Length: 220
Image (cartoon, rainbow, N blue to C red; front, side):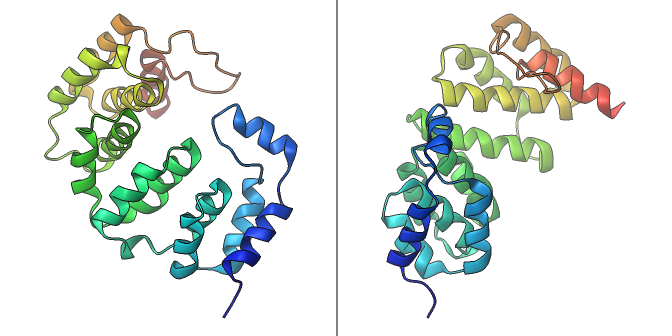
């Protein structure tokens, strides 16, 4: 039978650390469970789709993160994933859902197109995140010129989460597609998005012109 949802929630509550919560809340993530410990719980539980569904329905952030890890990505319908994405307002839940579940789904391309055009900037940011993946791995069929047109017209005024996703796409196009690199660099320089973002030593700046130059330089 395994653990019940109540037992798992109690275990997550016992892992709550106020210091972890304080750090997470600065990034908009309302949970206090160390992610290494969360992953250890998921490893023990293994794949449990029914339990995952119950945990997701609680609305609790730590429970939803665990639900993502123990779910079966390919079992979700398009509509289920669309509904879950629209419920996932916490950044970490949103990111894990896109990266660990949606990207493994047979519905990924349909959802990418659907979300890319959504008026909700948080939903649209998921569409851009999936587009980044396609730019890098499966660019055939993508109109990179149109993507750059949209970035050029809309990124500077986009809400923060959408802006970051669009900026990532801009950088990815510049990195992966030499024929578009000069334009991607020019857009980044003209818009100046994230130019002054504080970057720790040893990390790559998210400012697209620096990001593109650094990764291309590493690849030689």
